[in-house]
Length: 444
Image 1 (cartoon, rainbow, N blue to C red):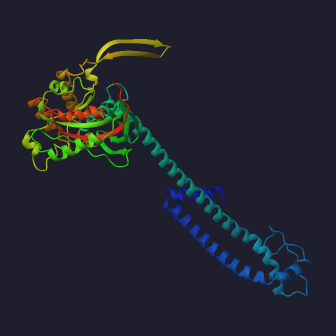
Image 2 (image 1 turned 30 degrees about the vertical axis):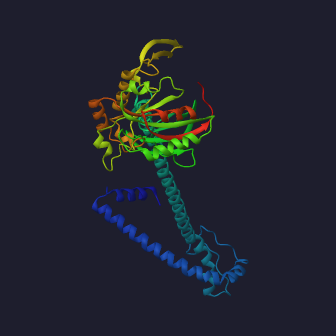
Image 3 (image 1 turned 180 degrees about the vertical axis):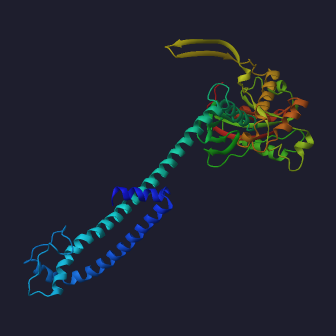
């Protein structure tokens, strides 16, 4: 196909030709279509005849001059046939030339079709590869953006959401589970959110005992999933305290009897319910001079009618605070701060803080304030509290304690078994419930 005609075809498809030129091109295209149809029919017919006569043609061609591929078909320059050959024998001599000339068009067309299919396959795979690359790239870009966003949102730095949420979970466990603390609480941020893990421990005798592995996954300010993997054979029962005036004669007598049968040389965890409500200082003074250690103080969460109401969860869902205060960042007093420049672009800083000092069997005001500060800290984070304390109405509990003060009606203690047994003769020990027992590890 000549270049001028190819350019004219391009202009035709682009709509740049006049009506007269367009009609001329369409006429040429019709001629080409008819020509192609005719050549195709001739090729099909000649191919069938040629395949049947191939053997005869080979014998004839062995004695004749081969036909030049570029030789015209009219035969003006072709060798004249011998006289003893008929007119019908001359036509087969032209078949190979005819097929070599026009068959090349057929072959080129098939080659063009193969080339087109090959190009189409390559284009298809390139398209698929490009689409897959875009999807994979978008996925990693999304992961990267989410990681950066979460790092900024949770604020790895000081006083960020990461530290706050970790403190909320640690505090919620401490005020709702007697003699249980969340220690070694680590946290990390990834594209899915914030993950906090730690070990739940309790004190039995003079030893800290790991009882469970705890984990919670947080998205924004909502605890998405949480899990407590207990290290005991079965999930430990939740210890409870009975308010003053409750009839506990039967179960209390059985617990005292079990305590009496425990051998000497063991330490025990015990939960003592008082005969009446005490202030924090009064409750601590009850154990002064005794060879045992207070662990956790149970606080009155509501009125007597609320606590004794049928179906109320206040008795089973106890509230209180640990003997060792839960200090927060707001309780710190800065003692010293220094910075040192290292190199051109970095520096180190060091700070030292102190917390309020409390007496072993006193400082009730400081302890009460720390307890209320803890309630105020965790109160707004209801989406996170569904993990460590799902059934607590902290708004109602906090409001009651603010109006009526901190009233203690029970305490968790630990110490030598025979020392704890002596509490049976004390009037304030209204009821006892036993926790875990271990071999001797007591340090006076």
